[in-house]
Length: 273
Ligand code: IPD
Ligand code: CA
Ligand code: CA
Image 1 (tube, rainbow, N blue to C red):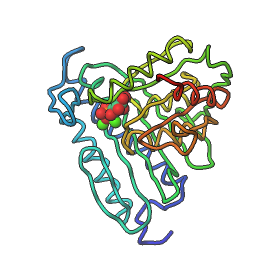
Image 2: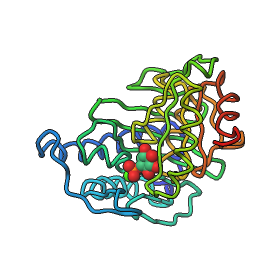
Image 3: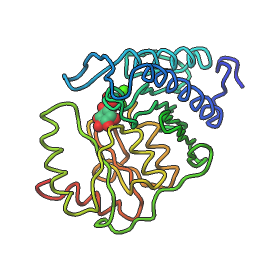
Image 4: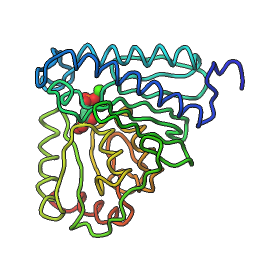
């Protein structure tokens, strides 16, 4: 290991193990805060991109924990966090952090939220971890090393019939973007088994990775929403892309069982959607 790399080496397996550890720690910190309130009691929150886009003291505390750990272990890496972390490093590795993905669920005491931690090099994500503390579930992957849920290998579904596929999606916090998203759902709904909107993009991608969804699509995300989940999905055997079949991007993300990918792309792009 190069000493300038810090105490965690740049090998994907080491980065994955470290990402797992800090994702668990940050998720538990948030969960502890949440549990101090009664069931269903809303967490006090501020708002960001719109009046429906919440942020809590726990988003900020969880990001602080992640950043402090990364700064100590990998001082020369870039860090980009949803709550404002912005360190420019020299190592060529970037950490993309979503301390709580699914903050609206967290505020309402719904269980579908997680901490998402990804390490990205110039070609894309190389290691990632998604910790869902209410369920006690940890998803992770490293490039070429497969995906796991609580240490056991996971695989996407074998779905091949889009009309029987269970599809996840999500919606922007911005009303004008929701108009187009609503039209697309309207178009898809009669053509598939059903649609799910869990409220956490990172978890949606992990749901595809372990076969709980056959596919997921969303647009207008940020890098911290999808970097870990896209790697976990693709390492599970899922096909990931944008809406035209190129690489998945925050602007347009699809992850699906390979057998329904082409049909989903066609439906997403079908006239009127
Ligand atoms: C949001 C969730 C949601 C998705 C939104 C994201 P946040 O992230 O992932 O499922 O539909 O686009 O912004 O704000 O809870 O971290
Ligand atoms: Ca998010
Ligand atoms: Ca977030």
